[in-house]
Length: 582
Image 1 (cartoon, one colour):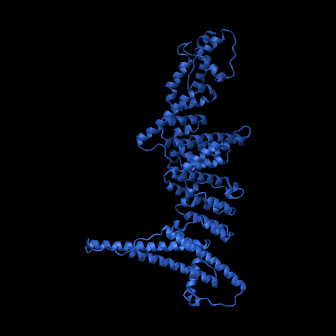
Image 2 (cartoon, rainbow, N blue to C red):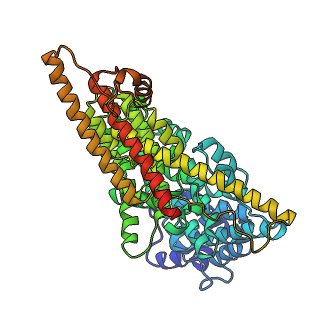
Image 3 (spheres, rainbow, N blue to C red):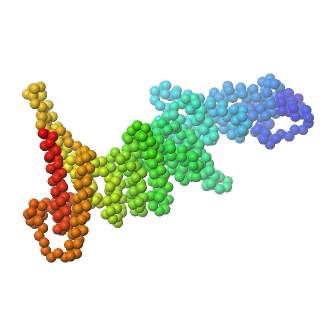
């Protein structure tokens, strides 16, 4: 009875020479079931090799040394033949064998069964992608349905289920999945297909609340800790699998990265993984919308929104982005476009934060200064953020309001925002006057453009009727060229406005002193020496624009000086036009 064992199994051939009794070790591959199948094969009983048992048979055959050295076409050779000719030619069979390798690790890995399954699946996945593209000339996997939308696990799950090969891959244990992704990249699959597969896997095992709840309920001991441990392991691995910087934003929707970031805040992941995730977000931050940025949930917040983990994390990432762009700029490149996009998104983000009543002014200023003022191409959203903050924090002093509004540059405001600023009673006098000055320039330019357009139409009509000859004078002769506000003019005007503001403050103090002294009577003269009683209507109009309040003697003098300033501005414009005509 020992002859077949000795003739086919090198392990028994050596062991039975010294003893008639053999006790198999505990680590025997596959246990008693595998040993039973080996005995059937050894004593020539019928044994069917299939995808469900071939991996166990191959591991046992190697352990028992069932090679051709002891018997022709032994179990090792038969198992390898079945794997190569049957299993690795079929997607479903390869998946079954790979799943059956899990309890046989590390033997199945040492015998390269796992790696051969991985390479086979990766090759067939590449063919699955290429074949539809050749037939239909369209991508086999599209992320258009996720572009520009907030992250939704259920929608992503539906998209993943449309391709069976993706659905099969994301069901594998992470160790196998990680190897397949590496093989897909080695075999040349483009990143626009590899990246979404990683995204679908993370959506199922990291972002899905249903999966987390399932792990908690099926855990034998501490459900919450066991579930978090599993999620942390997968999340840290997913971060390593994400595309490289230059390909990150094109392969995977930006909202996915922010969904991962939000999930990482509730988990204690390693510091190096946290830094990697932040760096990947920095590389695609210019593609993000302000609605992608993380906001703290009210039910989980304690204290000010400015001290929340979400806001602090976003602040850190934007600072990293600005520092990186400035470093590139110092080398002679000008990444202004991307930086201005991020600045615009950041200003819209802090606008949402500004409405929190518990946000202190010091913290709000810190958030404004995350992006330097000079790096903002437009200040419209910054103006909106400051206006929102002033409305929600009405107890600020005039000095605090002025210090906040100093971050706004009127020349970087749009015409519509300038109009709003003039009518905004939250703004200090200096900004209102600057906005009025720029509004006048915008209006003058609009009228000039309209006039030029009308003259161009007239010249076109003359050319069509034939009355305008090549030697005729141009309709533009004698017209002043288009005017624009230079930095020198703006700074000069700003200086005059600041001086006027200081004078108004001084007049206000003197007015308070005079009121306290109870001056019995006085006569107020206008700017031209006439009685102000005849000029109440113009002053009342100024009051309506600037918002000085009741028209006392001191306020009339202030309004008169502002009128002087506006006249100077008008004279400056007229004088400039005359100079150009000369």
